[in-house]
Length: 161
Image (cartoon, rainbow, N blue to C red; front, side, top):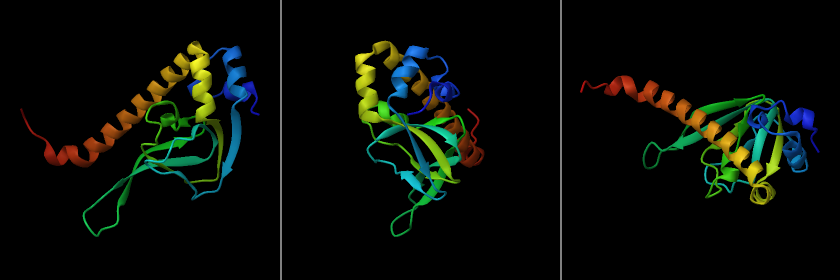
């Protein structure tokens, strides 16, 4: 079990009450992974929502270059201490939309997706806060993706309208 004082340090949980954090504490488990470990792939069932305590994780997608060629991995975002990942655990269809690989030895706090969604259904105020935090993560990730897209393609396709 993870202490409430630890959970309070994460931006994802910053607006949560102590009572809500006590509920989440009961679901929180610590997981440790070595550098190089792939946590999940695009399309995998989203088994957990994660908060990163230590380390660095790359979120990536495979870019298929054509028949007979291996896919090229494109890094979409880096997750570091204090950040979250795995929002797909609470958003249908509950499958990860990117892959995740540890770049350093990594310590995570994991919330089981089934138990978390059941708790969200039971406590709508808690569910609403989790979805608000999830929306912020998705928005940030979308902004990073746009920056990458403009950086890679924007300059070569600039058009005056």
